[in-house]
Image 1 (cartoon, rainbow, N blue to C red):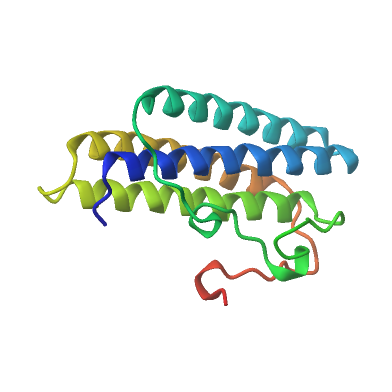
Image 2 (image 1 turned 180 degrees about the horizontal axis):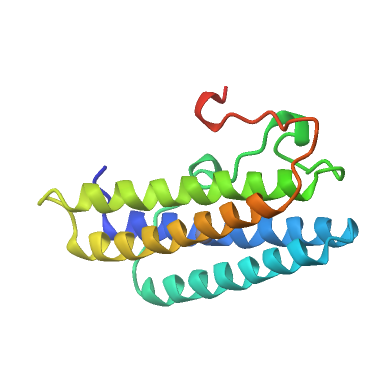
Length: 167
Ligand code: ZN
């Protein structure tokens, strides 16, 4: 897809803002579960997301940004964890990591697609530059979460999310 710079920046700002909000929720939840390790990982992710958000806002200074629909950036939750409004407080660390991992992967996919679209020759080279950079960052987040998922015990009742076949 061919993103204009304003549309791309609006997406990136919304994605980072959303990530910070969700990680904050997840961190609080993990703290309530007395899982300080995963809570502090999520607090780090809040910090990264905010820093990234602020630097994109800075980059977008003076650019008139389009207004997006929430479905264009909102993290997806499976209905069994409370739908769109709230997490199930019983969410395990593994579930929380898996949920974050899927949404980091979606962000990575978005930036990769934006970079590819911008690289076709008709796109904005600035979009390509930023999108490639952001895609690499998101890939690191996905990898970090994968490492955590490998360490955290998987709950016996599997969490039923299938991001590729979501209704
Ligand atoms: Zn990320």
